[in-house]
Length: 464
Image (tube, rainbow, N blue to C red):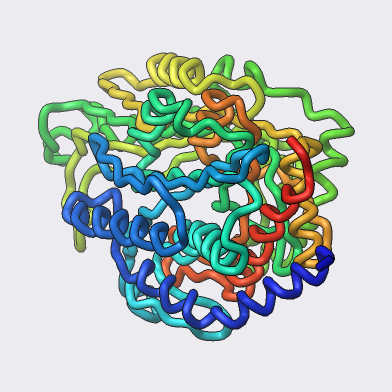
């Protein structure tokens, strides 16, 4: 009888034998500019969905559908012939961020190249490269064994980068179709190269747009300056009121539902390696900033935030234009934890703005994104099976960090399907996701295929 180590070694050999072909396919996938945020790329997003559906056919999956939505399509596929075995639903997204600013890319964003052991292209690590790991793992197992050790479903969307407006209702309306014993998502990062991680906490998200109006037009600063309200002054005053001098959010009620940071929780967070001075040097920072009394890892993983993402108003061209601006705007986002409810936080911020707006300022606050926080139990058997797979392939047990980012659909999958979510990422935080020169380490692409094969094989000898 072939033992597990021999099986893993054999699959490693097969991945290596097919590596160049797999990379060529990934390059094809990455060359499609499936930018969901820009309407002029709608046809390219649809082309990405069609390309992905064709790759699922090649992998041996069945019941493949390109499902139209009010926005971009959802791609579905399954293979459900492993009698008595659990069902794993793989989620990912084939849409990507815009590539701007183009001048900062060393190679064209949609002309993938491999250099220094990395594949460079928009979407390489977020999320086409990580998603394609699962497609190739299924294909390899089907070709080598003729079947899969588990039942598998794929649900892949084209709108993750625009906050998944059409996926939550699709999940709710199709919960029987998507029913699974676990949802596996590869859209997160390792702690560092060679040290895998299974994220067990994601902060919620609330994104807002604030517009401040004063007069009905910009006014001459000589004729009107000092006598009429200035929209830029007004918005700066409002934005500055969001925090006190100790870095704490000053919005009344903002911390309702935020869990107490116990010594046990602090010890858990502290297990995750962090090199403070090297990060400062890498980011050219003189110092960190944030809520007093908490470490960098605590501030970015288990504490809520309110950030100003962008601000505009008045004249910003070359030279001088002496006006009193009549309109200013800002983008704002919050990361939420524990039992914080994004709708309640929205109301609290709205009340705060109305309380602190200067005389003569009219305000509009629009909600753009809302997602609840997610907490996962690292002892859950499906998560532990994923940890076993990582350990066999990478020769080190993964850690279980609490991430500061948000994947809004995780909470929806967990709640609607009542299934554990396994955040089985293969990226690195240094891979420039959402930035110029995005890339994905080829080693994690190939080892990722091995790891997913091993994860599926973990179910082979168990009875359910």
